[in-house]
Length: 300
Ligand code: ATP
Image 1 (tube, rainbow, N blue to C red):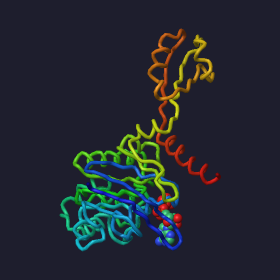
Image 2 (image 1 turned 30 degrees about the vertical axis):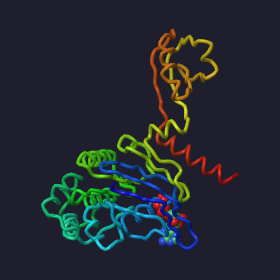
Image 3 (image 1 turned 180 degrees about the vertical axis):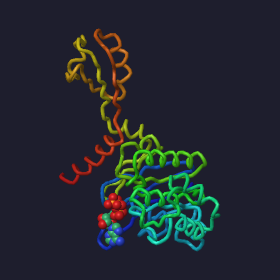
Image 4 (image 1 turned 90 degrees about the horizontal axis):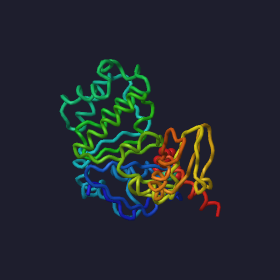
């Protein structure tokens, strides 16, 4: 296993930042770590990085204690991009990256390729203080990717990136996964992430609200599939009227995920049908479902 958390708890004076968290990640897994502000995401990342000690429970990274005697060797295999990354303002982008390469014990050769990969070659010789927010974020990504880390932890990696850079970033994630890296991606921006993660872990007030593949979580929520039938003169059979909402140029049907295929077979025969659009529950829907449950539990 690459990461193992077993009944991990973290308390700061009076604050239960994490409670009984269990997690295992194997090689090549890409995990999306989600939760509201203060849910415990950064605490989880810091525990895995060996920056803080768990109050109880066990943290294992590559089978070892990330705060143990050989932690410096272990850290060479890690890549980390923190939220709101900041660098030495007077250094150029290339100098910053070379400096981190030296600290990490990796060759300088790859820094040029990494700057190219994140689209910073043309400003590599400019001082960081002249960089835009997005450029700094790209430099942060390049730093995190140094040495092809076996485990990559990314806190809000796409903040400040434009759509093309965001796409480029997800491409890098896909490439790293293909080369066997394990990735934890922590983000409040849910749209667009789902294609790139294998599993999601949703935290709420330091507790695990849900964990699993998106398809499993989607099933567990019981959220409906919304099928939009387009057609100005749709002849909807009587038995479908109960689940139907008439909208502009058509009708919307809400069905359970299990009933989706049966419904699709039925609607193919509907007269006046011009087009069909099927909307599965999104990551945002799944996230809202689990975090709403938390609010409901608080009220009661
Ligand atoms: P955000 O999305 O806002 O970054 P997060 O999910 O990363 O939030 P954490 O930073 O892990 O949340 O914080 C979890 C809880 O632990 C919060 O209640 C926070 O106030 C508390 N906390 C974090 N660090 C400390 C600290 N050093 N001392 C005291 N409390 C802390």
